[in-house]
Image (cartoon, rainbow, N blue to C red; front, top):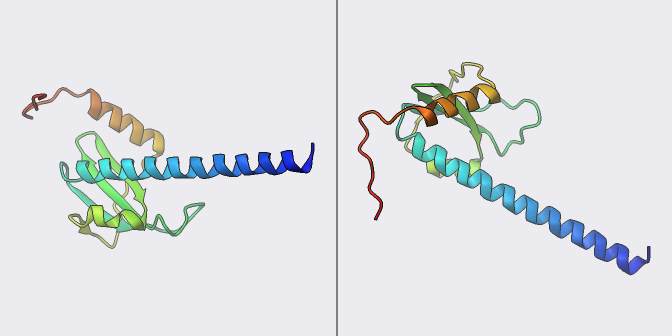
Length: 124
């Protein structure tokens, strides 16, 4: 492979990596927006995260939402903290040790429950 082709390939890989990073950041931001909305619908709070494993310091807080299907907790970026200013700040976590798969099962259960006394929003 010529030097010119290798540089082009490296630049292309760098561009793909940068695009993937931006895409991931958009997905995390969107997830956090949804968490902010849902945290207004159910009892919720925010706690400092313990720094273990491979979580960078930027994800130093946990939003904990107590739903009828069970607790749902997610780490959030310090950049997204303003979205959660409405939450009570607790020093101690009450995390019930649910796993990612437990969280997904709880979300699926919530998504499949019939709407009870909620007013349906009409489409315009």
